[in-house]
Image 1 (cartoon, rainbow, N blue to C red):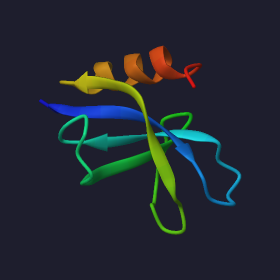
Image 2 (spheres, rainbow, N blue to C red; image 1 turned 135 degrees about the vertical axis):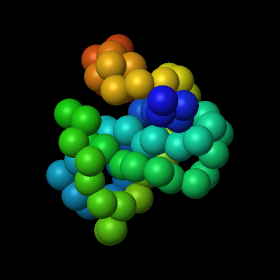
Image 3 (spheres, rainbow, N blue to C red; image 1 turned 90 degrees about the vertical axis):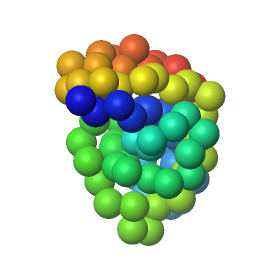
Image 4 (cartoon, helix red, strand yellow; image 1 turned 45 degrees about the horizontal axis):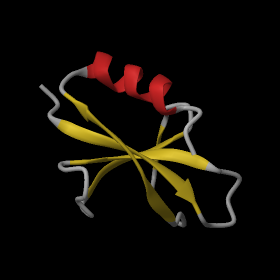
Length: 76
């Protein structure tokens, strides 16, 4: 089981990324497990800055991950 949270983020750096997702152990946690681009591909946090938005989803398995990506894709 995964038992983590996926939260939509807005990147604030000069990269070509607008939105993405952070995976953490709790919705308000600052300890990053993984960082993803808008398509759900894992990226490194090197040279990226972002702020978490209010949209967060509990993940218990890999299907939840892809469902969360689709459900939050157009939220800003």
